[in-house]
Image (cartoon, rainbow, N blue to C red; front, side):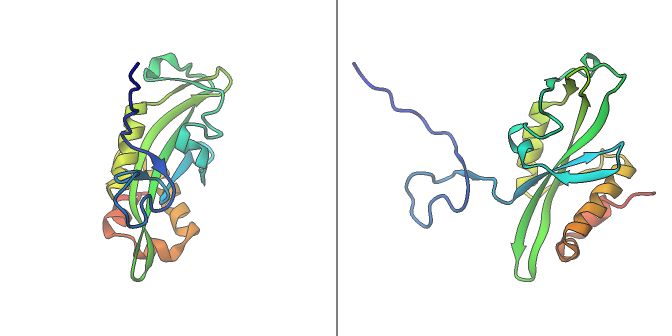
Length: 172
């Protein structure tokens, strides 16, 4: 009987995977510098919920998600943004390098919700690649996110790109 070796495509791990050597773990994906920020549009607040890394944020728990908006009962449904924020470091200090937003609609009462899992995964990837994708957000949500990022660490905001600052400027 032959034993098949398990193929390792990628690992999600913490810290430097190889610490300088070229053995196991080379090419592994590190999510250490990524934080999921949830924006509750109705409440006008933003907060970090690490559970969102595995689709287990407080907003997502006990909700069956569908990629079809029509399957979410409208009455009682709340809109949210899941924003992937990647932090990078340069000589002057840390800054917000990648910021990408994904839409979610949740009806806790009916335990149903809408989100596009491929979009969430792709936006996480884009954030890690230092992209800014927030143009599809409403102005109120952009302002909530900008205020949250500034309030979290104003120096990080000041060191961030003009592209990010311009993208989060709202007309409110």
